Image 1: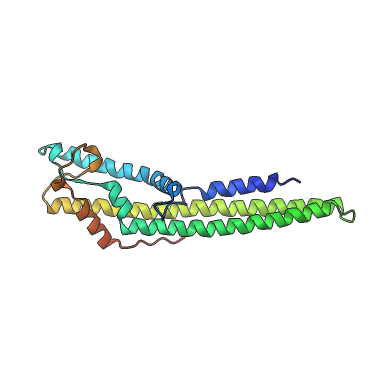
Image 2: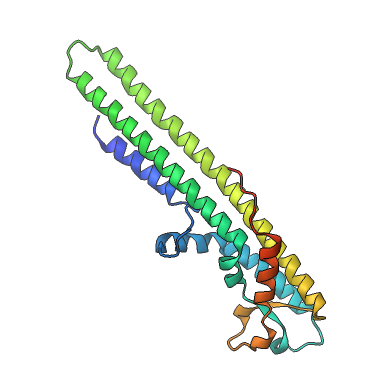
Length: 217
């Protein structure tokens, strides 16, 4: 058997390691940053849709005069989101170590099979058994890896949803306190009146309520 088996295994592991689980903790990691942004696009779109719905309910205010929040900034700077990103980085590191150990195990098994193939004392039945063990080990690891990814994705999505839902509650509460009917996302404006920017107020309230968030993998 050639090394292609191990190379394919390495590729499959790498594909999972580059999944949305591996989101950034260090802004200098451009690839992780890109993945992190992509993972939140759908949720932020949902939040923007809710903000747009609030805007449509306003019948007496001019859109240009509506208070706004910078959702992208809040999602990048909130303590809860930073905690989530750090946890993703931690889990990614653990996953990389497990994958490396597994690849080393596969290589060791591969070498034993090669030696056995050149040993006349080893029967074909024994060789087939060694090959079967190799295939079963590989399949079992990939099944565990896939199951772990699906579980972790569900956990992280739940944590991000909790942050977004809290953000909506806080935005609504601050809007009521300021006696305004609608708050929109900054992204709808080309030119913004900074006096209408509620981002800092919302971010401070969010960080006060959610300094961290429970993420159990």
